[in-house]
Image (cartoon, rainbow, N blue to C red; front, top):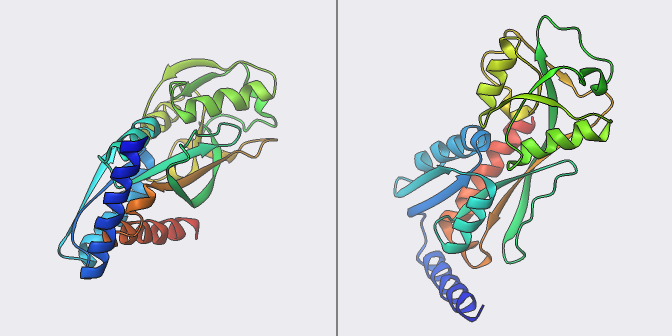
Length: 232
């Protein structure tokens, strides 16, 4: 803890020094889960590098626990974290967080299927889900158990595009956040979850001592602008 305090004080001094020099340059590293990396971090990186020729933006795809660890160790400057309804994310108190957006989680079913009136109507259907170590996997389990059934999970997948692809082939159903619904939607119905309001909240996390670094400040601003576009 003493070493962490010393490191934070040094980083705070460095942030103030960079801010006093003016300009936005150097390297800023963003860690994010997959859909956040493609829909938030990548567009923000393009915007930043077009606006600041001396700035390099590195984007790393990683799950929340890894992002939090790397943020603490200094391997990242900004982390994008996710939290689902009833599945909170344990964010350490020493990190500073800011909410970017709240998006609905929707039901994905094959186009040929009749829409269910209740989520429980899919109790006997095959399901496609992320592993339970991931927030999306835990959120799916919680949503199904909350209405009284254990989902029959036939496919464990860590990528939402692959999940949607399996649904498109008629192999099962799933729950996906709105941000993951992009590109080719043929063959899949994306519907509100019947009888349930499920959401995913996306936040930024930084070390407080680095929050005022010009590059970090600019990165959070670009992420916020991109999140506002998706909200619209």
